[in-house]
Length: 295
Image (tube, rainbow, N blue to C red):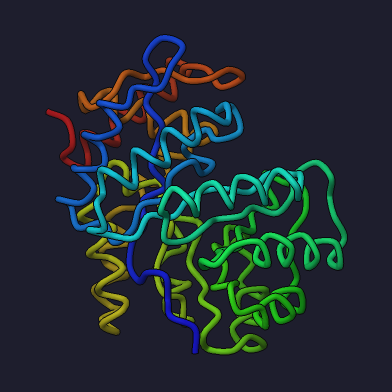
């Protein structure tokens, strides 16, 4: 059986900006807070990290900084997927050379590949590296999704470790778990579905909310891993209003605003993302206060 890249809560960490560049000192502080909060792995340069607007040099600087700052305390997973197979391979190779433990590769957006094309795309990336590859299925953003049969085919590749499932399609998730071998891991890609997916056999979450509440997301996944699902359900419900507020506008706008209100980063974004509207910002502030994160 393939080794599991991580179990528990992995944070899809934000990218703090300062002026026109990346704020690496703030990034270091965010990483340390995550590790002290019990986060089980760190995903750098994912959707929440605004990877699509980062230059190649910025992406590699963040990946290298994350590897160095984490210093093997938890696994580091680098987002290396694009809508170009060649670009994805190049980024994947560079991230492996930088010392990451695994890769996160999204379904190719805009191109809308066929299922056969998806198998060929992900297989080509996995062929090019010697570390685990986690697939990322998020059809609401990419316009294309994987089928359970596609996962079944990809699960045969020795370097493909599993999938971050952000479709919220529970029929797909159940079919995947039934068709794929035990070594193919499913992680929740949506914070609000964490306990439900883990009850079906998922091994954790790649989390946006963990940026704000790392300890709570770690505890939620640990309860699930210990089969304490009644307690996990209670905690999932407790986090519900906060999680909903963190997605009241497109991710990562609200989570960066939340971290700014908590005094951890500046609320800076790369266009076309922009600051929150007044009404949604006010609702987010209320949710943060309700969660005890603001006075």
